[in-house]
Length: 144
Length: 98
Image 1 (cartoon, rainbow over the protein chains, first blue to last red):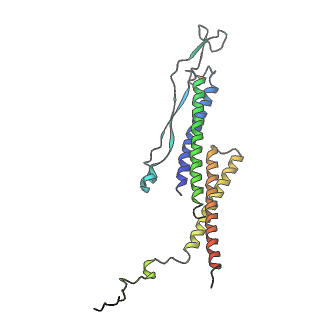
Image 2 (cartoon, rainbow over the protein chains, first blue to last red; image 1 turned 30 degrees about the vertical axis):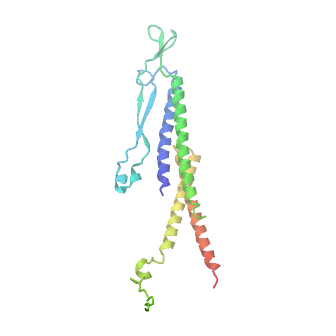
Image 3 (cartoon, rainbow over the protein chains, first blue to last red; image 1 turned 90 degrees about the vertical axis):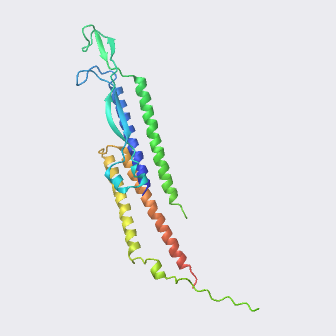
């Protein structure tokens, strides 16, 4: 069942892109948040993904040439050290002594671009999966 | 000058059907078919469980459910194609002139 591996690879890419869209949603939802749990303010989150290593035991045991094709995985979620956006709002409960409120340095345009990129990558994963499925179904028509 | 007639060319070795082709056990194909049916059924059950979890809101990722559905569908289609080939062969034998 060779096409199942193509399905698994595409599924790993889909999971990564789904997590990226989730992070973008978190960033956009917190674009106007002035507090965070750790007290340093909200910072934009970024997802770091990497190629999944094919050196796990079943792949080594199989020893096949295609056994090391494993897809993508989420490595970590990091925060960008962008400076906060200071807005002069003296009556705000989170304003400092000069009357400035530190809004998070989240760029909505960059977030939208990240989201669009993730959506397009997800669509590409679906296209690859559909191609593998079409190949499998076409194989079933041999001789028929 | 007389030419020698072409003599009978002896075969180098006798082709033995018994030794050349390992004879399969009689129940091999039916066992294989039963195993494949079981696997396809497992795929279907897994896809059905995924659908139930999706309907009840327990599932985390949608694409795993869809991929399980597609795997089950491809398995069923493979089984249907095997069945078509078998029936074609059977009907070919039925149409054979005696």
